Amino acid sequence: MSKVTIIGATGNVGMFATYAISSNPHVREILLYGREGRETLLRGITQDFVDSFAARGTDIKISWTTNLKDAAGSDVVVISAGIPRTPGQDRLDLALENAKVLAPLAQAIGIIAPETKILVVTNPVDVMTCIVLKHSGLKPNQVFGMGTHLDSMRLKSLIAAYFKVHVSEVHTRIIGEHGDSMVPLWSATTIGGIKISNLPAFAHLPVNEIIESVKSSGNLIIKDKGSTVYGPGEAIATLVKTVIGDENRILTVSAYIKSEINGMGEGDVCIGVPARINHDGVFPISIKIDESEVIAFRESVEKIRTITRKVLSENEE
Image: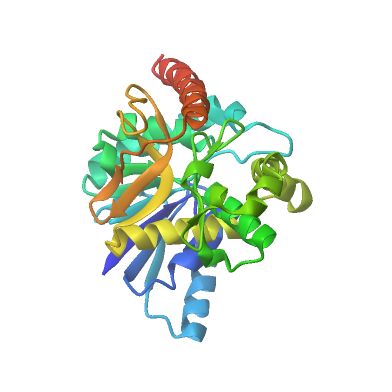
């Protein structure tokens, strides 16, 4: 039975992620962390969850704190704290501001809960994952970001709708940046176990339109309702479940890479890649991809590496 701490618990994503995580039978305790001055809100949120659990019949301990030392013993720490993205704002515009928020949190977590696994949700998630890794002092397998996991699910849903099949029949993934330079792996996409390029209908698939839809999905939701909540919340719960359930699933998350993707990566970069996830953490797997995908992925890596190095440099000044 596991303990999960949510940092940024007063935000919409943090609150819904808490609700989604609470349905996991492996979770025995959820700790909601917020900054000082948010005590009343944290108390109200916690009591609301207590009532929800009572109505559902869920036997989970839930508590709140403004003292990060209470996160000791956490199996997973979810970080969704930070300044949210506004309509039309690029995720990378947030990097310098959110690095200032996450760096001290990461440093404290590394000391308080040295055995934990940290799941970073704060945008720009690839850059923030590297910031947390550097400042926490934890091993690369202990720190990962949501990365392109939700993007991959969005692509999966759109492909299923086009081919009129159940979403479970589609296997696909997006690697690279959680942002404009994301790279869909059509070479690794199958429907019912059949490589998508072997299906005649693939020739008519509006590839560019679909990818643009995936890229703009989050921004459109933010424009229409103010924030993305349910998609990210469920994605967070899935990733937490994969870790504490020791499931050994291969999911596409932001992780520190060495040379797993056609020999690219090593040096100040965390980015979306397929990784085996279990109770010990996240382990990128080695894959070969088509040459066009290699070129696009290399550009995405260099983009994220450049901004990450800039943020790391300015954050250390």
